[in-house]
Length: 337
Image (tube, rainbow, N blue to C red):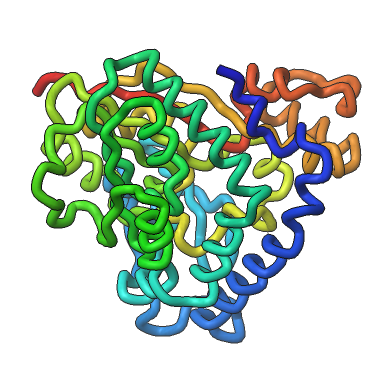
């Protein structure tokens, strides 16, 4: 198992090859964001609602403001330390972004780009191998199955793999590849036989949920004790996000909660899941090193409280040992009630 096998920073030419698809996606997202904002950059009336901390319900008025972007106010909860957006787009607007929009079309085009798809398939094999190290192969449900990379890898490894996905075009793509996927939002009515899963996968899903704790608690009810939950989320404490702040493309509509290792583990424990494995992967080190050395060193000092003498000598392993990679990846087991 080698998590560096799917690190874009270690793939010469990868960024250039994906540049057209990435540019189209960012442009579509910018237009989608702008359509919900007024001239002052605030949400239009009726487009959003304000919430308190989704983990502990502490009032948003008691939280610390970290940054503002795209009409969102990112706060750090004074009680549980979770970073979250106070402002969340109403569900009808949000659903349109994933089901029928230029942004969803551009996202699908990126996912099926051969360069991107090859890297995603490599990551999917790694995820399944990690899961295989914890549990005997059986039945697996992928929530947010997208274009089916995980379904494909799980099926090849001997799992019975099912997927639920909100984007009908992505579901059609999966079905054309002979994968078992349906269009819907979990929890939804599942086909006969889609029960008693040994593992559930949620990669880049949890951050999109307005009430992640309630979702996880409901999911836990549907899982037997001892079943496994595999989670990937953006790492708010990553080196690149710390350097870029509101300019980073993870700070966007649709991302309503911003997890760090401690707050992800806390959220999972509150929902009835025990952490057995947690790491970061995907370093984005090439993007990091494109910044001036002083900026890199300042961010490293802020995050690790250690001096970085030569930022250009920083390695991918250094980034992950400090838990500063771009994605958090964890395996959690449902505990007995």
